[in-house]
Image (cartoon, rainbow, N blue to C red):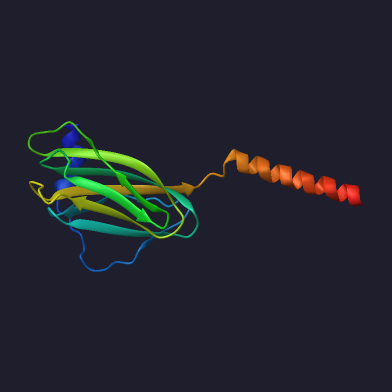
Length: 162
């Protein structure tokens, strides 16, 4: 029953606006307040565009439903740094409606798109919901150590001269 309650809103009235929409601009600490729902017909794609003000780690949480246990939905993130594909993990099904989910993080340094593609042989349209949150990309500890060593070297060289 929990499975049905989780996915029932996705099966409710969902639309994807076919008109061109401006990219969602993300900054540190942004997150979606509620899941964003969409429905994609067999053989088509839905694209959501994003842009970032600073390099960010964007974590997506996605759930999809169809009569093929969510296997008809493929996710791709395309950005300045290249392309990454993600697959969904099937959820236990309830009757003929099946679902799948995934979560992943993407290090964004500029504009990027989340593309949901539905197989042309899908038995029906696929509904999916996504949400996201953002955080700063952590500076590796090695970078911090290197910076400290360079600063220490500069201070030592200055003391020798003066």
